[in-house]
Image (tube, rainbow, N blue to C red):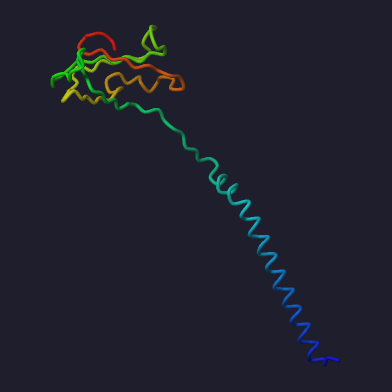
Length: 141
């Protein structure tokens, strides 16, 4: 038979074990609830603040000019007319811009489309466009 002292020690040990187990369960439960709610709370906090993409005012365009024979054009200044069409061939240009002085070196050119005609940003960019260019009134390509 166990003494009263041993019984008290055994009871205290059982109570402590039950308390520790209960605390672990509560801690695990709280952790799981927070883990499940964290993504929802993270995406909902500051619900009024939204970020939107903006249409760029200018588009950087780079190209290499070659002659009809495939040779690199001479260095110099060229006048280039850029057009955007909604159809692959034919139709009316949805946007046009003339860049009167485009510097060409080793056949390379770099321009910002929309720097002359600023209506580029007002186009409906959810559709496809086709870009043509006319160098020194040599015909669209």
